[in-house]
Length: 488
Image (cartoon, rainbow, N blue to C red):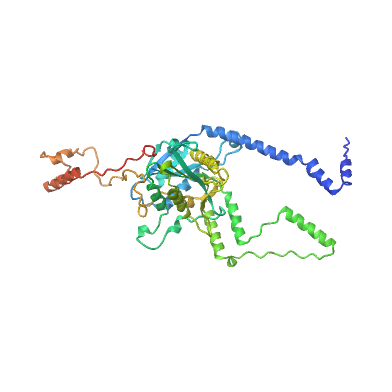
């Protein structure tokens, strides 16, 4: 069988001017190729979005309220370990799970909410991870109390402007490259004062701000975290190499252009110079700022990474709105984690913050209010800005239970009592007689176990006096917490 190849068009094309040759190659013969690639990619993304929406509609979330005991002395390393445990939910779906079932990586929302001055720590998670989250918390805080509660956001208006309420909200972004770490909790330690106060908890300012809210004011603080793989490590290492001065490896374009340059140089009679070997970068030639940045990146690489997104909403009745105090106070809290030579947080003024100016400022502000409220209520990791990467150490710095030795926040919800184990030498058994304690204060004779001495009249009398004083002591009255505060 003979195969005839027709090169007539190619031979004709050689007689055309150069612009016509480029036009035919780029747009006539192969111009359809990039359009086809983009169309196929777009169709695949639409299909994936459709399947993931179907999967998301079947998922249920739960809201867990966490009350920790009084006199919490656990260090922030416990919360760092908590986030490391949460990373165990990370899973990479296979092709069938991703493209047919719509399976995607679930996210968790760690929140702090203050309503009328009462503060509650919350974790919002998929319902199938309830036991998983409780285990993560109990492993670090055995005396904590965890309760499933109603979602507090359901009472807030969905659309704005609203006749009764107004809000200010924003996402918070990093001020520099995500490879650079923020100021972590270890940098808040100092060497002055009592041993229990060597750590100056940055949470103190937020707890004080939330406790000062009046009736009709609410402050919501949300951190969406999604466990991620370890692909980001190579990206961070490239950023570290860029700071050091490592030159990137040769690309295909640079190799081809280099050969073309050599050919033209040889044709013009120029001698080719041997390629110079680049000098390896040295840490001795770096500035102190660059050394600190490289060390910070390496420390962050050694930790566990999460895709994170931070939102804040200040919701209040219009007559109670106090933006200069609450909004600026929260921004000040986030500024504590900033370092000019490293990283920090800033409000997303250009896109999601509900402060606008110039053309149709009020209408655009209302659009942003509706968007930030919808994204917050959905605990969405898709809506809004692109997530950035934070380590479990950074997350523990910006979300943790306050340390009572340095944070005085009386309206933080606490566990009712500390649960302790019975002493090892406590006599227990079926043969032990039951004592009627009411008869202790009567004249009747009471039988005690052989190893327990009878109570003396002097002890009995002093105990009776103590009980009588307790009954006569006036009870301290305090305001009742609001009904929509998510705690039991």
